[in-house]
Image (cartoon, rainbow, N blue to C red):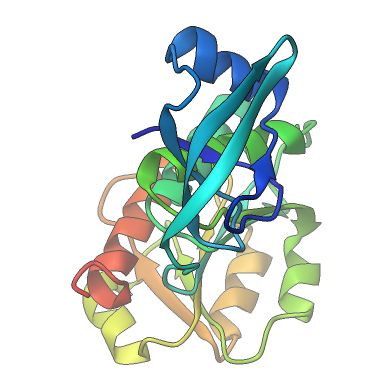
Length: 239
């Protein structure tokens, strides 16, 4: 069944107005008509079964019926990824949402190549990925922040999986030994971390430095590999 993310509150008999683009998708692409059903979520009120109540010249009106799933969130893991080229960053955001991250934080490192980031585009990608994967929550995508500032204000109790291209411990055993606390996964830029950044990261008490294997991975590939390994070791794949 079609799933749609909307910003409006959801409750029994609530009227929901999708955007014009969403309305066109429902009526012109999927060919839905009055009375046809779909699933709707807003990231706060769970997932609801809705029907198309009205078809107007400038959109449609949905009517909420019953809640089919309560609100829930996945494992408490964040992706911290250096700002990279547009296509790679968009791909990483999409796959991170599919792999269950709760939050995506863009990072500026010493070797990050400065470029404009369209946050609205990344938000749209995150929403679409949540729609397609059956999630009832949508991860937040944060504006870029310098790595040093991020570490200065680090959240107490959250561990950091530092994916070090120069080498580290085998991922599975290292993560299992560190435990199932809230985590963040850090992926660097194409040029890797600077020696100063690497030294600081390895010295932090909450850091677990790991290796992603013998090959040098692109940032988007590294993000997928790291999140997959995290999910298999301490995530929710076996739950």
